[in-house]
Length: 546
Image 1: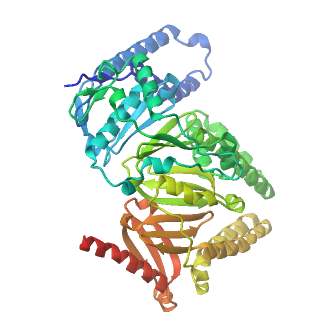
Image 2 (image 1 turned 135 degrees about the vertical axis):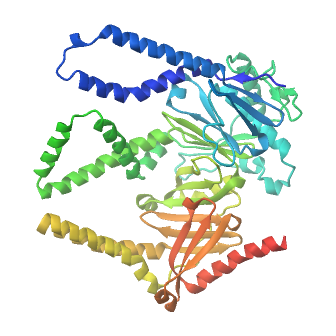
């Protein structure tokens, strides 16, 4: 039986800090209401201070009890977590069910120099598989334990099927501008020796390890890190600050900015008096219709600048690293995340070319991974030249390849791409004319935009079948190309109205395990759609034969 390990002692502060964060809006609201028309002399400072000290003491006591009652043990084939102050909870997570151990650094953990471990298993496990406060050295020890378990549980496979690291570590990807280059890490032996030295110097939460910083092997014996077979570890790419700024400027994420503004408004709604809102509405009613256009443009520019700032905060320090047979993606300035996934669990890859990026030959690449985490869409590269995408996918997800579109919608399917866009333009124009009068006639300029939008979407859509891979390209505003392997497709749905079928047109919807990555294509030639249907039926035939 291995000795239990505990979280870092700073975990005692978590209830106090989290309560302070939650009580700040309430305290501000109560203060505004209380001080309305009163002086500071009317405040019962003695009782207020006594109440704050008593509450802080209770929260610290509760934090100590939570820390004392939270322990985890690395067993031969599982990790055992025991926690709970009033009600004890015991959680056994078997190594064979662990997909990955992701490391995160929310703002509180980052300020305290700690790391949060999230153990990813099939299904939803709420917060049961989370170790919220460990040191970086302990997080590395846990991940080494998991990788050792994974190697022990998986039988040896041919090198062609395991995507050996050596094949992925040879050579570099260098962009034409020379700003980004694949770099190699130090040797595994040097990193392991460094880890041993750091672990020997670390203090706090390594009681469960052996005296030399080791961990139990598959037979339960404690192995020092030096005896663990070293793994290849190399940095596939690091995004320079200049490239990150370019990605942020060319990817206006207005939804992210609107969500941020909405959160601020919701927070301010609890603090600001109702009179302020009434005066704002009265002032808005006196604005001339012609000024609304300038206000709208200013709002879009400010939202774009805000989205640039939030994008850079989110993806600062973006790094993709290969650790053994897994891919690690780390990023974040205020809240640092490090996500691990196996290439075999990648369901599909999406290449998105924004309006501005496409002009200069750039795109972003995401992979969609089968995982129980809320984060199922991993950014693989925020800004990469389209010419370098085939090599990037070959290194990270060798089962997916870049294929050219070979089938496009026929010319007589253009109306299917124009109808809803023209209907949207008509609805907006009618509303603007009714509200703004003659000035609203400017909204008729939306019709040429809608026509160009529809024709561009028709021109850029299409598909390709190569081997066991289906490639679908479509456009809303940005051009999106999705690469899907046939084994990952659950069902294919073919639809078409009577009128569409008479004209030889059908629509296609590809359904996958993750519903939010389903892909659809409208207005395709019936022969092309039936070819996809026959291709998918071969999947069932292969299963029957096997």
